Length: 126
Length: 469
Image (cartoon, rainbow over all chains, first blue to last red; front, side, top):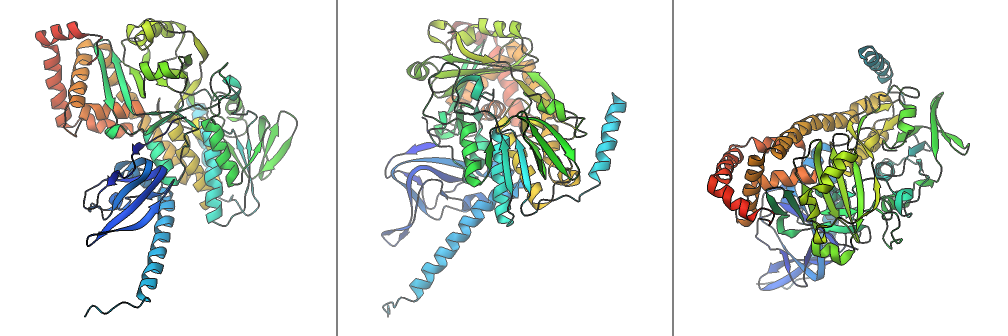
């Protein structure tokens, strides 16, 4: 039996918010938390498992990473380079179909969370 | 010969005028051959059909069980899933589980008479998978692992394909259908027949010309064998590195020793490999030094499979398409990647466009042509690599340039990237050729040609030859 990708130990940072990047990541084994900073607090945006991907925005735009990815327990991660990905979709646009489906689910999930947040009564800061 | 070609072209052009055939709910598809091309075609066909709300019946004809050890369950191939294929499969959501992967490869070790150098993957990430196409070599113990081909069969079956354990012996056009006939007398009509038998069976020869105006691909012979070394010995001697050889042996293009579980697989590619060529390679010191005490153990299993070196003309007809090695593949490299690409292109065409020759000509043939034209550039790349193999002074320069790049911190490693992509088949040959004419690469190569062949450098090399760089 053999594993692919690179092994990240528990708590190891895979990508850091604010770093530049040119690849996305696919979880082969283990779990990964996607985090962002809210003031001094760390907020877990999403918890990912086998076959989930993250960091996909770096494939489409040359922007800085918008969140941090951290291994929860030992995690095996495979990278997908921008060059290989773009070469792939230029030949076969359906390669991006699964990503579009998952990204659309994520938008749906975010919309539901935003609606729930908007409907929660908040203390008036003034 | 020319008249025959014209005849094929005319007949094909007439057929290509029709685009009246398409798949409809309840259509039947026969996939002849359950190797990677056949399984991936079935998987993607059913995936696209689900999107298009099309209910199809897919039968994969494969008489072999990939759970068998040795030739009975083997598809005669080195068993390398390239970096680019692994990344594409991961993007598709198809992971290779650890019980299918015999070893993750994190580097290449290049052996030449002037020395040895190791090329590491960025971050030492394992992005190349060594797999078995069957369940291991002859006389090996049945493994708990599933073969790569067996795993893909499972994925296709989970999507809804049906495995038919029968040997297809003939295919005939009957009215508006293709009749598939089996050795046991079973026969059935299909709306689309997909030929994914590879080129090591006589099936492709039997249908080309008689059933469809298709000229079969050109082939050459390769050599593959397995050495039983044991897991710990492999860890100690070969590690997670694929060992490649650039040696001055006539007709030998490339040889690689691929570490797997308890075995190492040797693949030799070249101009019609024969016993003389195999013996010349086995006598080389560079190959012997890969084994403990430089003694090559007897091989457990060997074969001389043929590979496709020129695309079939044209690998489709009304209701017939040839994918994977039966149609086209990449020259010497990434055969599994080409099987995936052609299988998916054929599946996309069948579901979204139709199954007439014209549909395949418009939506499937451009990919085959692209692979074919890239192979022509590949032939040129391999001929240049052959010149380097033959000239000792150029081998010294390649070794020096690569070793310095690997030891240094410069993120741009031009020679290493070119060698990596030639060995792994990760990039098209066109892109590799483009990088070899970059002024920085050419300048670096000229400098290293001079520096490595300077008399003092040659004396130093002579003192350290064979000890690795």
